[in-house]
Length: 338
Image 1 (cartoon, rainbow, N blue to C red):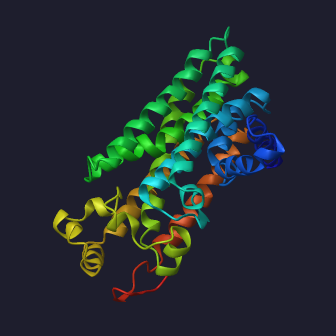
Image 2 (image 1 turned 90 degrees about the vertical axis):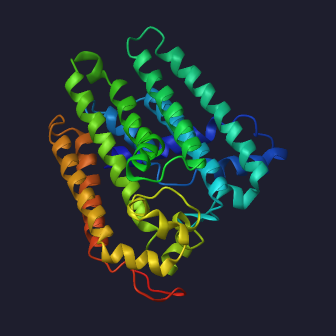
Image 3 (image 1 turned 30 degrees about the vertical axis):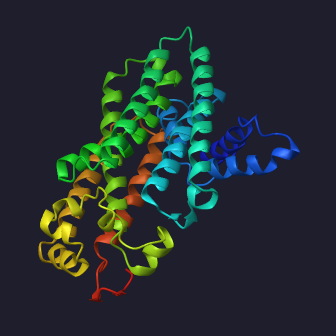
C-alpha cells in the first residue's frame, strides 16, 4: 500500500528533524548516536497510528505524523532500557544501543528521547487545545507511559512467573503500546469526530489486546528456536530461561524444573506435556478473534485492509512455526535450528 510507504518515508524525515540539539558539524557523532536510537526497526507502532487514522479517513496529515513520532519515542527509549537490563547484545540481529555505545550513553539517550517526547506531547496539546478529542488522545499516552513503567518495574523485580502474572506484565509492556497506538490514530480521525464511535472503540480495543497477545507469544516461542537463530537474533542462547525472564511457555513449567536450569530436563518436560502445542492452540484462537474484530470495521477502508494483511501474515508464520521441529537436542551443546 503506497500510502504506508509514503507515511514511513515522511515519518523517518520527521523523527530525524526533531533532533535540534545536535546540528553543528562538531556534534555529528552525537547526531549519529541519536539516529541509531530511533531509525532502526520496522516502525510498526507508528504504522498502527496510521492504521487507526485510516479506519475511517482516506488520508493522513502532519498531526498524524506528530502522534506517531510520540509513540515511537516511547517505544525506542523503552527498548534501550530493556536491552540494557537484559544484557542482550543483539535485537533482531542488530547491535543493541547499550552494547554499541555503553550503558551510560544508553541511559543518557533514553533521557534525551523522553525530553523529545515531552516536546511532542506539548505540541500535540496545543494542536488539539480546543478539540474535544484532546483529553482522549492524551489519556492514551498517559496509559502507555504508566502501564509500561509499572510493567517494566514488575518484570525487573520478578514479581510474577505464573501464566496469569506473565499475561498481566505482557499486557502492560507489549499490548498497551500496540492497542493505544491504533486508538490514538482512530481518535484523531475526522471519522471519529463526526460519528458515534463507542462500538468501534470497543472493537479496536479488543483487536489491539489480541494483537499484543500474538506478538508476545511469537516472541516467547522464538527464544526456543535453534542455536544459529538464537545467536543471530539475540546474541546468546535461551535468554528467557537462563535470565529468569517472563515467557508464556516457561510459565507452564514447574518451578522445580525452571529453577534447576537443566536445559535437557526443560526440553523433556515441554515435549512430554506438549506445551508448544498448547500455546499454539491458544494463539490460533486469538487469531480467530482478530479476524472477527477486523470484519466489524468499516468496509473497504485502507486501515482494515492493512489489518487483514497483518492477520494473514501472522496466521502463516504461526502455522509454519507450529509445524516446525523446534527442539532437536542430542546433548546440551547440539541444537538444530528450525
